[in-house]
Length: 475
Image (tube, rainbow, N blue to C red; front, side, top):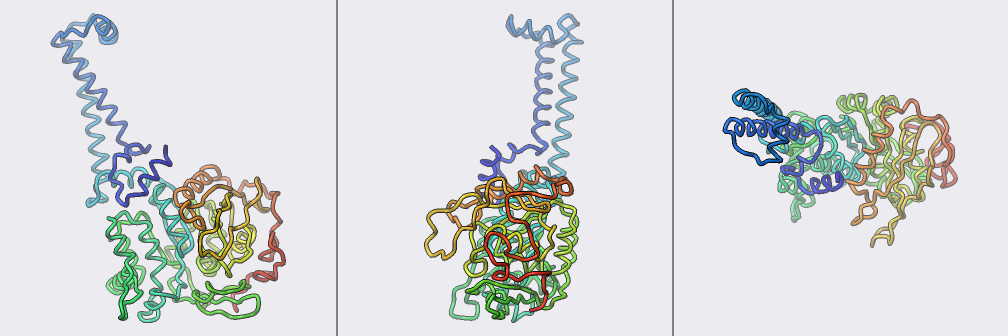
């Protein structure tokens, strides 16, 4: 039932639908029920005062429960008083509930306000870390569980419209942030289409996204880039907030197994061979204060999904972000991709993905791994990679990490996650494991023991992946 409701709600940016009333916690149904009882009591009081016949059987039953032997005036007065009290109390509570939700979002339909305030507003504080196309997919699902969402997004992109705006205006790349804003939006469909609109001309606007230009303009109006992102979020009526992982202008640098040095995310992401190491320039880029604070206060931290070395790891290369994740009190999950990125993670298994995250964030930075358990067949046309190797049933990692296996594939795009499936798996894993992180067993069997070397799992030689030893911040 809940999955059906979520799927129906996810189809519409505005949730002003009676489906909202089916969701527990909306704080309306109880007052409607109380008011209904009050109306029944009022009706009985009027019936008794007018001495209307109810029929033999019903009269006998009602009479037993309704002071049959009391004087008519007392009998009717009691029921009318009870009815007035119940209807009045229910009306006051209904008005307070509706007014409270309305006061925060005056421009929203009333059911939207109730849904966000009563249901989503009481959800857990969730921080998701990543970028690219994977993070928006996750956000589209999670926004139906909680509005206490913070997306911490990489700002190392240097390609396309984002890269051009970055070099011309000296601002962080807005592309990944724009995608997350649209994913969290509750605005009308046309507004979301506007944010995603891409110009196709023979002039300088060719290839630019309107949303990127809008964020750049709002950054100029607001005085800084993050203020521009906040204003854009208000325009889109997003559920949650989006923050960059760092306020510095950073560049991603990678080194391949052959020793080739690649500068820029666009080059690292299109490498035709496996990566040995990635780093950020400058190396000491500070974390955005809001990103660090959100991680420290989160009930749940989700890393991924997304390209491992160009969407997730760049956030962890910000030392304060990695330290905050490693030392966080909340439950920490890693969502492994369902398919490899050709070149970037060629030959990687789930184990290799997890080892890479631990390599950059610390050995104790992952509590739960969400892994797909269904291979997509046949391979989509034009896709050069392969599915990530499935995890054996019941498998877990040493040192506190538990593996949750589930079918999370998008049926229409089988190399990507299904947002609703993934959100439901994450919500279930959170309910099952919240508060247990420090009590998880120290040793788990089923997959190779974690070593200091990335890539020491099922795929073979660690030196063929990213090297060994402690993470190196220089290349």
